Every structure is written in structure tokens, then in C-alpha cells.
Image (cartoon, rainbow, N blue to C red):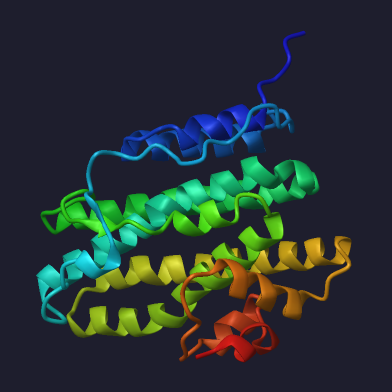
Length: 266
């Protein structure tokens, strides 16, 4: 009987797919194959240090990113959607890398969860790119932030550090800013974009919850108290600052209580 291909090989293939449409299709295929039991829970290949990405968009440091333009204008909304699409595109790779790099350190349910997150991120990117195209643009038409993979590189050696920084800092930040962004988009009369952002917001509460739950599980195994260990890891591996205001309600729903982040807030 032929042995099933490993989930690690399938994940690596997604990470090494550069073209956005093909990456989304590869992501969906891998998530579906895992759910159907056609991939073995085996980690027999290393993950790449960096995923494959397309030639466009041009990646720029934050201080060289162009301004988005007048709030409420179509140009500003296209710039916003493009920035969000890039975040979701990189988030596909972050979720797959989480499963492929650290899946062997946790129970099988860890891979279940992070591949489900990866499937959500692929869907989010597809929705945002479709909306961009409806507005006469598309992913790759504008420059994008170059630093989104830095957190993955800094935490490639430590699953708890990765969990602390990516879902519990970076994705949690989306919970803080999305409601105000939705309000601005609605003020401009763009209900289609608002619906997409609300869908992403709902999914991201679940993603932060998954990250927090696995972080606490890992801390239990490592005999660490979660909140102070999270603060240590964030102080060590996150290059930015935790800035209020925080969406305490959404964070609380995800299990990310104020005891985690209040001491580091600036």
C-alpha cells in the first residue's frame, strides 16, 4: 500500500508557491486533503526560511510607503484594501509555516487548527483581491510593507515565541483597529468592503483564540506562567510597541485578557 504524502511536504509546496492565485489554490487543496485524511501527520522536510512571493507588489520599508490619500476617497480605499490584501497574503504563509514548522511539537489538533486558519487567510485574501478588482485595481498594483515576515524569522526557533508574537500581537492588533476602519468605510458608502472586513474581523477573533489557547497549552507543558512568559517573549522578539486603544471586549472573547498586555501597553 502506498504511503500517504506527509502534511509537511504539502505545506512546504504551498510556501514555495509564489503566484497569488496559485498559492490560494494550493492552500485550499492542502487544507481539503488534510481534512479528508489524505495527508499523513509526518514532518519529514524542513520549512523554507522564507516563502516564495511574486515580483509584484514592490516591497518597501514602512518609512517609504506612500500615503493613502484623503480619507473616504476611492483612492484611499483601494490603498487600504491593498494593504490588507498583503497582510492576508503573508498570513497564509504564516499559518502554514506555524503548522509545518511546529506541528511535530504539539498534538495533531495543532495542525487541524493552523490549517483551518490558513484556509481562512486564503479566503480573506481572495475576497480582498476580488474587491480590489471590482474597484479597477488588484493585488500587486501598489507597493506593500516589506517587514511582515520579520516576526516569523525572529521566532523560527521557538513555537511559544511564534504564538506570542504572531496571533497574540500582530493578529490581535487587527481586532483593535478593524471596527473603526469598518465605520470609515461605511461612512464612504462602501457596504461591500465593510462586509468583507466584518467577516475577517469575526474570523480573527477565532484565530487569536487559537493562538492564545495553544500558547497556554505550551506554557503548561513548559511549566511557565502564561502572562509573564508572554510579556518576556514579546519584549524579546517583537520589534514594535503595544499601543492602545485596545479592543478589550474582542480580546477577552479570544481569551487574550488584559493581564497579558496591559503591563506592556505604551
